[in-house]
Amino acid sequence: MPVSRRSALSILGGAPLWALPELRHDDGVLRVSAPGNLHFIEGPVLKRLQDGAGLVFSLQLTLSTDQFRTVSRRQVERFVVSFDLWEEKFAVTRLGLVKQQTSHLSRDAAERWMFDHAGLSLHGLRGDSPNWVRTELRVDDPRDSGGFILDPSLTLARLVDWFGRAPRGEASRWAWERGPFRLNELER
Amino acid sequence: MRSSSHFRRMVTAVFVTGFLIGVFSMRAFSWNAPDEANVNSRYTVESVEISGAEEEKLSKSLREELRSYVGKPFSPEKFGKLSSRVRQELKARLVSPKLVKGSSPENVRVVLDVLGQHVVLDTKSSRFAWHSKLGWTGDMVFSLHEGRRQLLTAGIFSDADTLVERSAGLKAGYRFSMLGDRVRPGISLSTSHAQYDSRTLSAAGTNDLYRSVDSFQPTVVLVPFRGDDGHELTLESGVRLQRFVLESPGPNRNVASHALVNTLRYQRVRGDVSTGRNVVKLSYGLANGTNALSSDYRFRRQEARGELVYQRGASTLSFDLLAGGLDGRSPIRDRFTAGTTRVLRGWSKFELAPLGADRLMATSTEYGHALKKKFELAAFLDSGALWNRGSVATVRNSVGAGLRSRDGFYLYVAFPLREGRMEASVVTGATF
Image 1 (cartoon, rainbow over the protein chains, first blue to last red):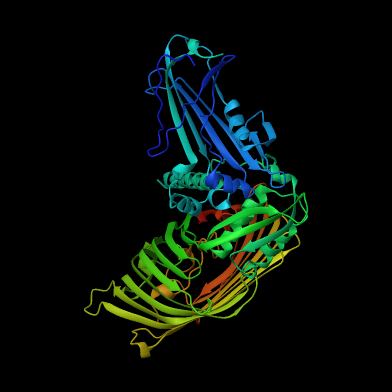
Image 2 (tube, chains in turn brown, purple):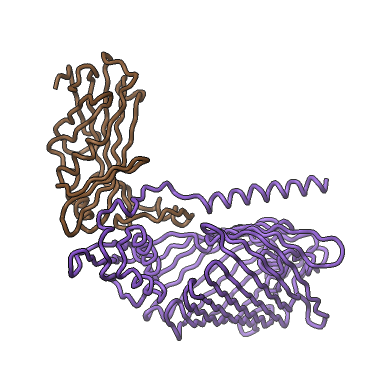
């Protein structure tokens, strides 16, 4: 990919450094592809899906022109991933006003589908300015409900309970940064 | 000046009410997945099983509800909520629902995996109340439970509602269970100081009032009978040791009030809301201040309470009865009061008996109708009499209406029924 200079980092200390995510210009939208050697549906996450849970993945893309001192674009997409118990295939639903759904996917295909359905609008941005993009992915943690759902009502007792819990583990968060790159140099 | 005071009260009432409604109606930011987003929601539930705990420990109504999902499509949302309820009832650390393949394709089994004892910090015994004629009451109690095994509580309170005086201080307690939760020894202790309304001060002799009190109460709760759904009979027995510092300037300012305390409690819950659910709670308490414990007071205080609740669909009808009798010479804090946020609402306790009284009989009949979500409209009729032995009991009534929520919030406007001018009281608050 024709990018003049690139840097990448795993934001989370101790996390492995994956291959860099690929960027492409898709009809006015910046798409990020999942790093080739990264599988985030594995380990405890995969086990919970195989137990019938529907897990919500949040994928956030952030674009900056000054190495994240300021943010010029930000987009969050939320996906529900579930594992069909009998067919042993994955299904993914993109949440939002316009829902999109797919099923009968392999694990790799489910992971790719989420990245393919997240993007940042590039409308109004200059093509020759340097940009940086940060990609953050996390599995929202429904804790005691085992992934089925969180009881959404809020009480003081629940708040005390909530704040008394251990912080989220790093196994369910991933992040990458990429840049600087110029929009007019991106593959289309 | 008077109108300014009324205005301030109204502003306070509006603020407090708004705050409480806000706290109790807000919903956490939710990232819940809708049912249809989980591909397994197309399968039919073949069975619902509990693993890691005895199903019999769940209430009958919850067991029946679990069974009612058999044969229906799997709903992640419903089973998520059920898991939370199972976790609460079993006081488990975690309840993890799992799906496994059923005996035939298109069927799944739901297994609720119960893990560990839950150590929970909660504030369930706390309450906040505001009465336009009495002021505010706050009782913040933090409870640390380890399942049903141990309970440690600590709290801070300023109570202008329950007693004749405003009592403010600190309290703590510890209780553990043994022999299959049939025996629960525990202690509670508190230290507080008292503040008196001017009407109490003008009615009292100096010997009646105290400045501060330290209390220590070791008791044992015995459970001779336990059935389904919290159906339980308990007897709590022990001693209450109290040391008062009196207001009087004399040399003998420290006095003791030690009493044997016994309370018998019974509760039963039957049915479910759709077909008719009734709750019965009864209690009888007897405190004997006796010289055998080197007490400076000799008295016998009896208090009986009954609460009947019938709930069907959107309607709830409840009836409460409170009766008490006090004989002998006791500290002022053992005397009965009415005209509070719970008894004879609408009246002021200082108007009825600024020093309290030694006889009380009060009832409350309340009807509630559920609105959308968790709020209810309620209307009530309170009746009762508060008098001293040898004097004539005068029955007083009050009516009121308001809004309450299942989470514990309430806001009532109550009117004392009497001749002459009608002055409403606003009673609001929340239990947590």
